[in-house]
Image (cartoon, rainbow, N blue to C red; front, side):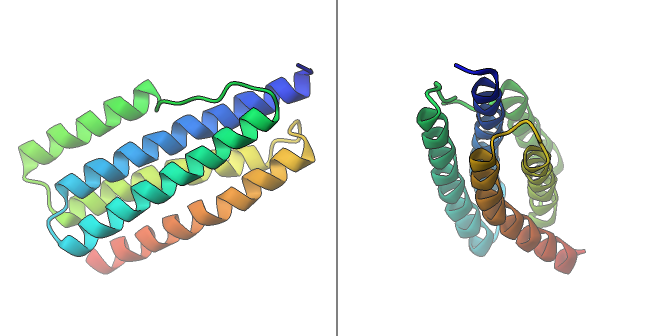
Length: 150
């Protein structure tokens, strides 16, 4: 596999792990939210992010690579930390939304970094940019919700 292709697979696999972290984060948020409107939104977002991860995995396969299939260790640890924090503090919807926004900031930054990667082939950067539109829209909506709660 050429170095540029190998690099593209590595970058995409990093985005897959981050996206799967996001799936786990949204599932945790759905369990911890009080209002059904937030629970439903988080369940829907987890499903949407799962589809995004599948799309990223398809991109990796199209490059001849082996896609990641599990979230990263840091994402798993963060989700457990959020569970413990909510158990200890009696987490509110506001606290859950704050954690979701923190996760959204992280995934948005990872996609933005990939879009600026000049070593990615243009077709891969175009795919990342296309996927980023969904990530950014979700980020902006969560940010808007957070600001209405504060």
